[in-house]
Image (cartoon, rainbow, N blue to C red; front, side, top):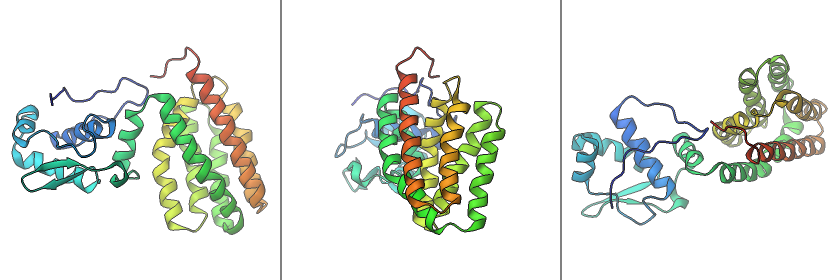
Length: 250
């Protein structure tokens, strides 16, 4: 298989620059695997070829492949080399793997994947938090909402919006749900940045989140679930408007 230049994404989901060659190799090979250039069951190009392509020593390349193996993307077998594992073996909640997955998908596919996960995860988490959240945790969620209210620009809105959703997951008192919520923040960040392309983002976002907060403060699980479902459906429609428009996604 021909080796191509390192992957570059020109979409709005622009990857951060990495300085070390080791990190660049991990990202490049990881992106190619996640994007399907190296399908499950297929061997990566021979070690000598990869070393020549990236102009690195075998030790640097092996360090990079060890990282990919730790993320569940490949398995190294004696005499067989590095083989791509089945997608079901990938550590999709690993921040790098999740980010590569986001980048590798066209925007509509990424949005549909994320919104499906959010529709399953967030309403149930909000309902549980409404039942069990402590007063201190509810104050933290309310503080995040206040940060959203105080935001003057889409950029200022981003972090308190992320904190709002992350703190709801943390308020369940379930460490695994909190972890999943934290990992989903990476994909959620890209979703919020995309929806912020609408000129009325702030006015649209606040009432939806206020409804969720009110239900949480009232310890109303059904209300929290329903408010979250409404917020997600409205978000899906907002993003559909952007994808169907002529707005630049970069």
